[in-house]
Length: 258
Image 1: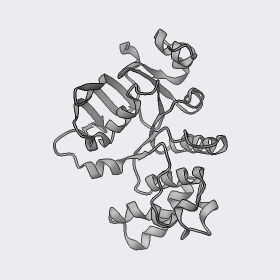
Image 2: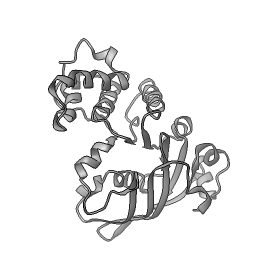
Image 3: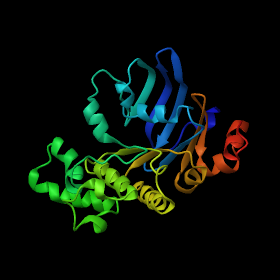
């Protein structure tokens, strides 16, 4: 990847020479990029190319994978998150994650949102306000305000995903990672999530993995193309989609890949 597209203004996340192995298999190879603050960065590429593995490095979710080994640096607000003195619980509070399939807890809508703040010691009298604020931020309060004690699993798929976003927002992260958050949703729910992501970037830095080229083009400010564990190209989304520097990027975006 050419050097001139690596550096961006006001980086919130800086990744330097990141390598990752699952046992003997190397899944990420010398990844270096900078993610701008208050932006949406999309990661695209074929299945198995390292996108989800990479995004899980940003809040150390790969720590939970047996025989996973990592070398390189991931700096968030100038702190190396792989440093020996890093509190991983605090890191995951700062760097929230929304997964491919909605995963609400088997409890009420209210308790799903209140769960994280309670764990982190939010005063009991403040919980109601935190729950309402998170649901409003996820554009879900009006749809659920009269049934907050109902099971979260009674919500539709799209509502469940917005609930999971609200649950992430409730602990006041600075960065939100989305791993294919709309792949299991219908077009109307997908549009709502996309609108929400574009609104949230005013207050958060967002990184999203997606297989949907149109989605990446619609909602992201920056795009990175991964292939076989390497970051082939990274730059502003308009440049990546209209004048990519690498032929393999162009082939993938235009459907000629493979």
